[in-house]
View 1 (spheres, rainbow, N blue to C red):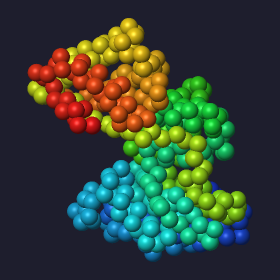
View 2 (view 1 turned 30 degrees about the vertical axis):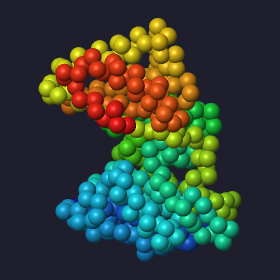
View 3 (view 1 turned 45 degrees about the vertical axis):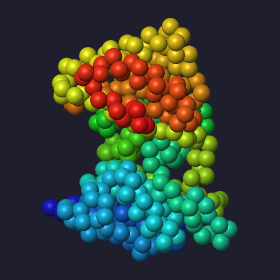
Amino acid sequence: VDFIPYYKESLQRAIIREVDSASALSDRPLSGLNIVVNPGNGAGCFFADLLRDLGANIAGSIHLTPDGTFPNTFGVPNPEKKEMVEETIRACEANDADVGIMFDTDADRSGFVLPRTVSSSGTRADHEALNGNRMIALISAVFSRSSPGCTIVTDSTTSEALSEYLENNLGLRHYRYVRGYANVIGKAEELTESGQANAEVAVEISGHCAMKENGYVDDGTYTAVKIIGLLARVNAEGKSKGSLLDLISDLKEMPYEEEMRIRVTDGSLDTTTYVFQQLTQSLKEKSEDGSAADWALDEDNQEGVRFRLLSGGHFMIRQSLHDPVISMQVESISQEEAREKVLDPLLMLLSEHDSVIDYSALKIA
């Protein structure tokens, strides 16, 4: 049975509902919008036709033929991949696009491209990626209107600034949980079913996003429905000629953001656990004894160990469950600040385990 026609119809109904079901243009609610779709020859190729049927101009879309060999220029589609983002930006610039949409191989993840500037005549320019913390912020802004005070469940690696934006600017609750989209979705369902929270959205920084209204299905095309619906609604209301990026202008973004990996050279998960436990203990001791005065332990963190930086940002380390790897994430006001306050102190601690780990990534970051 080919379920795609039924699935397309359900998404079309969702877009019409998002824009305005009572509108005289409800059968073509996307008229006047230029949308670039880049599914990377993956499962999301059908989405372009869906948008065209609703009135959107999709002429600038690329890689619309399903092909498991992925003959496109960036290989396997991944909306976080630099090459895929850059190609989508170029297509958006060339076609004066209101929005660019990217999907991964099976379209359960999505990423977006939006113009930074929109002229008084409506010309769009300076397109940028909307992914990671930015995407979570914009999706959350949608739900702050439709479900005030709801909870947004994310993975553990989202930024300090995102929490501030969700809670202080949007009046929502931010619940960080263990990385892994199944973990995040499961926690959202648990919080909602138990009555502890109304978790409208479960989303990973990688682009996996599930919503309560869609049965907590991990679906990149439904995420795109919400972004497109917001864009069409704003345009139809005539309230703004600016960019959707303006809606999240209060989200602070750190100039320096890096994720690095510390590899255990003997390949042993036992060694990985030992090194991780030793490193975690040393970090906590440095924070407690005052030798790292710029660190503040995040007591609510539920994965690995996370410290807020008093100058802004954070760093955290977490152990992979399946690979001999310890991941480290740093966000800071500058590369120099990250080097002085985080990386150099960690290099000293890691040197104690020289014989069993490769931490060269921290030396060059």
